[in-house]
Length: 96
Image 1 (tube, rainbow, N blue to C red):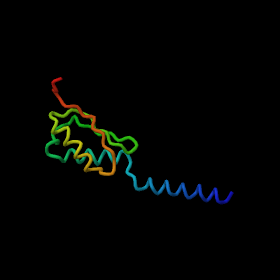
Image 2: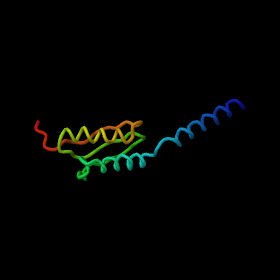
Image 3: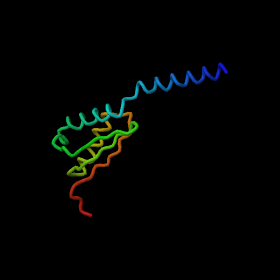
Image 4: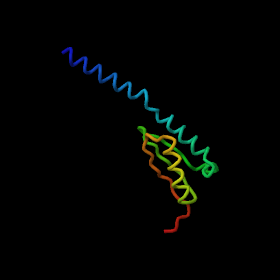
């Protein structure tokens, strides 16, 4: 019985220690949003939004060109290099 409790306590401490180093979703949102707003090519675009869920960063909104589409993802990934970034932005006026 004692080894099982020790194992459970050890696992709990490891989980807590891991969580302490992981930024919250809100902190990820703020970090990525700040980086995007500081980037000169993306600065004027108020439609870009950031939402993080379980450590995955999602990018939403409209961009004018494919270059901006790629750039917003590059800036976000540089801001949080250890997290997955999913670019769900849409390019305006794309002819299909």
